[in-house]
Amino acid sequence: MSSDAPDAVDSADVAAAADAPEDEPEANDSAVEEAAKHVPSGGPPLRVEGLVKRFGGVTAVDDASFEVESGSLTGLIGPNGAGKSTTFNCITGVHEPTAGTVYFEGEDITGLKPHQIARKGLVRTFQIARELSEMTVLENLMLAPQGQLGESAIRAVTPGLRGAVVEEETALRERAWETLEFFEIDHLAHEHAGNLSGGQRKLLEMARALMTDPEMVLLDEPLAGVNPTLEEKLLDRIHDLRADGYTFLLVEHDMDVIMNNCERVIVMHQGSVLAEGTGDEIRNDERVIEAYLGEDL
Ligand code: ADP
Ligand code: MG
Image (cartoon, rainbow, N blue to C red):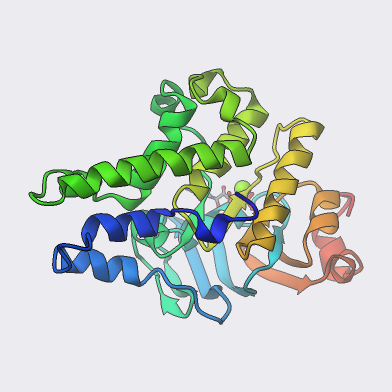
């Protein structure tokens, strides 16, 4: 998949095929328009401006602004409670921001639902929920785009589109196997997700995110609890995908991982962006050292 991903059947193509089969071009216009929006542009894929998120009296994100460059692997770091996860949740529609604007590929996506944002090509990884643990690894992958994209059920009952749905199903299965192979978990395809090790689960989480054929992936501590061998595998896969043009924003505790893998680092502290720069710039920044008081940088 790493060498031929751009040619691989992707969910947007699948959706487009289902919505507008060649012999029925006028079917389901709005979904066709939705699919057509999934086109990469040249600018920074992600720009956050003046983002604020309050939970009652707690200000989790406090006027955060930053940009992520296209095709980059950017690190987002900061002490515990700095607002990193909340920022991810606001970007991907899990939380509605209290204030501020999120732009994805130049388009204001603030307040959209997670599946709408995923359809535009911006996804985050999620922990495998309990009900998904009872499904196989392959089923988890087959379900991922539906879960994020939503409307398959409607298409499945729309007269004239059923044939396309079967084609979609076949393409989806092919893509699922490709993705499993890419992450080297194809031997686990028929295993219940709940039986995977912590590290294998992280690979599955990332595989699920990629099933939606995103432009950009937000990773919130993808290496937490992962053994060194799998950690290396995950990082290798991230670098492969990046070489294919994917953009990553990575939250990670381990500074060495950030310093060794990210060409740009954004530091959050108390809900705001404290500093931005290369790993070396960040490591030597007085404000950053102070924010991490006592912790190794
Ligand atoms: P980080 O991911 O950088 O560790 P978080 O974004 O998880 O930080 O949390 C930032 C702050 O917001 C913390 O003080 C946390 O307790 C608070 N917070 C996060 N989510 C919620 C929530 N759903 N309800 C209330 N407070 C929250
Ligand atoms: Mg967090």
